[in-house]
Image (tube, rainbow, N blue to C red):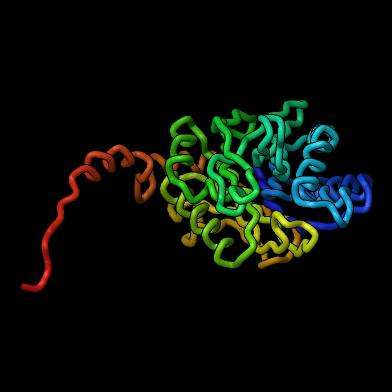
Length: 293
């Protein structure tokens, strides 16, 4: 299969037609490049908050995006069917669980199937605007294999990815939205670590560009990439493909489930198989005094 990860720029839209044209163009370009699975970033849908006007406050902007979610779903469903691709849409604040929104990424199948993954663990910034985590973690059983989604901060917590991998996930999608270079590298390092320890492929799609009108994330930094374990069948760096920092566009990589399965059973290391050895050893921590007399 070919996987496309977006380094996606947030833009101001004066109307719905502008947004629709942009998404249609992006999906069409990825499909023309042969992509089977497309990954958009965390909070990329917040560009729709521009339709709330220049003077709207943050909650009004978030609620505006949520109010447009049915239209967003319909658009992505049409495009997934038209191009015969799987699409992880850009996430958005979803108020359907109550007064406080969740950070939700929608998943669209070419047969019309639609589901979602909510972010599990909130950053300090999200907690500051009352965006809440919600469960459960989901395994998406697709024609391209079993896929899991670990949104941004979630990629930095190994037990979340491990729970998905133990249910047969071979591809993890890590959409992100980070304001600083340090934030980008935290997600990148987390994604690469998950690829290493889970012996799987991790797809990192970041939001980029300045959006001074958006309090949730006014500055966005990153470069899309696709990572695997640095082992047999993968590059020695573990990087299958990567984009240029802050340069919008698709980054594409050919991924083989057979290669993932082979490295899990015959790689130079067997991290996934050796997971069970950790817990009993972690309980045997000994404190050894080494202080000067």
